[in-house]
Image 1 (cartoon, rainbow, N blue to C red):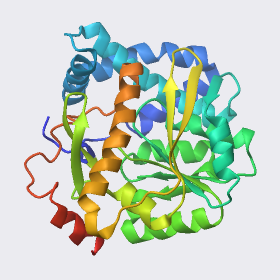
Image 2 (tube, rainbow, N blue to C red):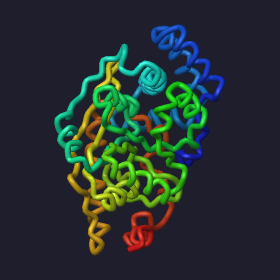
Image 3 (cartoon, rainbow, N blue to C red):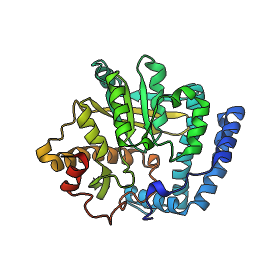
Length: 317
């Protein structure tokens, strides 16, 4: 359980993913969803650390012991959103019921023409965000993803929708390249979406209360928001079962300010605000939590992660 999330191998493999793609696209979504039951059982039996992480998270968020059935439901929800990524990329919103909340706030933010950051989490389906593409085709959406973490899935999704792959900013390229790509996209008025709940190995983290205990969150997204000086919104694509998704946008900050002379305090405050919203949606939709590792103990033994000096050194203050 102390293993870093980036060191865990990708689930399945190229053959398994292409097989489910073939079944899904040629047999249809109902047949594809039938396949989720043996897939869920397989991963429940074969992925012990993820199974344990699921149980511990559910017991924490539900505040009671959970059954094997509930753990399998959690894994099944994750598998369902992975399957739906295939259909969302191949056919768009067709066949899905996607409701959107906070669209007026999003529209007002886009009207400024300054670009914006959309910060999400590993909850539900980030892919549902692409529903905006069909509703606002004139607005560019760039998504920051680590292609090296899930190469088989990346290969599959880019084969389904090459134009979507072209809009991905690869997080594995390195800090400077990512920052320059995001800055350029924002200058062009694009929405840039990234997940801000997990820290990569050797990334600076700060701990903040989350579901009853301090949990580590990365500082990078907030330092990036500060340097770009663009509006920040939160986005959550909650899976509600069947073909239903709820896409939620929340205004977070017109501009994130991290003053040099009180950087540590400012980072703590902004990360705590973000964590409270993540906690809220974890409680609203617990089976949408897809961080299948020990979220609270990550890098717990590394000294200095929550040291203001370490943060200043990282950003060159």
